[in-house]
Image (cartoon, rainbow, N blue to C red):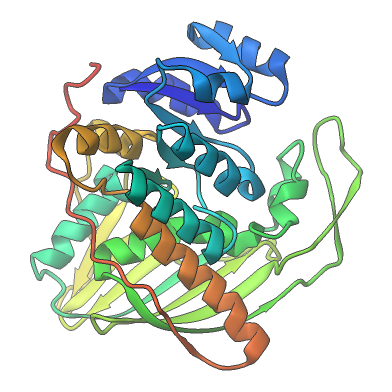
Length: 362
């Protein structure tokens, strides 16, 4: 499938590098900064550097990979759908449920597919965790804990203001990795409760040309939530840009027969570890294969296969919508001071068949 990429920021190189691995041809790129678009095109051998309007009108482009900032995700994706293109968004799907709903309705009306990052749950590490749970190794899942604790992206990102705007913050920026991993393991969430705060009014940029500049904080920077899954488990999820140091697990799953240690859901590999009720030590689970390395783009590759096979992609718009509902509802529970039942639901995405992309683009 021919891909046009909109947005040539920090995340674009890995997609450009990996495209051929998943049977994709990047035929055009676009950016508000035309010089940056031309530079990326030259670096990765992309034949066309275009404006957004030109890319959407290009008949060679079959799917638009939307790597714009969160506030632009919905508007760019909607324009792509109206131009007759399939869409794969960077996360989140949108910053409000209303705009995300509009995207899915438009895609359905036009017979087009919508996919959305993250696709890390399709990596070797999280797929191994899925098999361990499905095989009953740790028994019946009872509960989970998940922590994303950091001091914020302004330390390393050269232009981090958008991380502290509506539609970002630690929950909307990093929460999708954790929530998508948990939904892949447990299925959909039925109820959420939480507390959120913006601990500091401003942040200071620590690197790049804007080093020393102050940026306003317009969204919560520390979010603690309780998630009740429809299948039974109760999970605790904390996402924060307000913590200098922590010594907490990324994700742990607690079952009736033992515990599963899940790798960082922002990665594709391990380590994966299991400790059953009678074990004195943790046991490492072997994780290998091509999808144990940085495989960003595997979700887009699966969307291309889904279009050919007439099915939904695994990193689907429906999955991303449910994750967005969880995140938005968590912030709303903090404002209202009470738990909320979710109106959306989603089935666990099908496991990725072993070896599906082993030979593609090799």
